[in-house]
Amino acid sequence: MIYNKGLTLSCQSKQGHSTGEILNFMSIDAQRVSDFSWYMNDPWMVIVQIALALLILYKNLELASISALVASIIVMLANSLLSTLLVNYQDKLMESKDKRMRATSEILKNMRIFKLQGWEMKFLSKIVELRNGEIGWLKKYLYTRAVTSFLFWGAPIFVSLATFGTYMFMGIPLELGKILSALATFQILQEPISKLPDTISMIIQTKVSLDKIASFLSLDDLQPDITERLPRANSDI
Image (cartoon, rainbow, N blue to C red; front, side):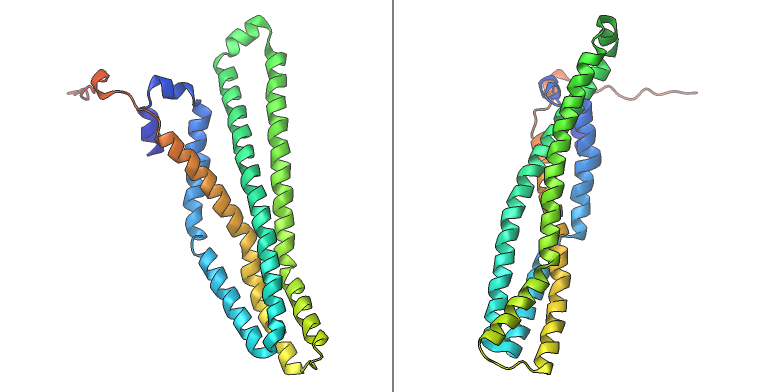
């Protein structure tokens, strides 16, 4: 679909998108949308698993399980803030990458003129500047993603400390059976929570790619009345 759209773009639409950008749509963005099928069921599965784990905690620890719910909500709110940052950084990263690809494509097209005028180093510094800007947004994105991963890997420990601390604060003696059951439940929580960073990251990247593809597909095409399709030539050889 993207390839066929690239063949029918009008001249005005082609001026706003370089060949490198169109290749990115077909190779990178389309692949991300395809990879999302592996993560499509993870969001609702994670919610169901967390809800069942909290229900088990409530049956074993009663009111002390409320602290587990509060701790989980705190983790979710922190994740929401980090997700917003990831969306912004991902948008800026893709925008800076497109600028670099557009500039590189234009330089390669006009390489003879640049060599004739001796402009190689001037435009090389421009490419390096765009590349450094892209690396800056990439660092911010990866650092934020690392904090998100750390938060969710440490979430089960945080939830368990909050739950057992509340249980002891209420003056209820801890029984071995309840402790083992709660620890097993926290272990169950670890798997869905550990999946959340990758799932959220994939959702964010897929959304950005879908927006870019949708914007590209909505560009104007060549007018059908000014184009003519020639029949394929027949050969008797």
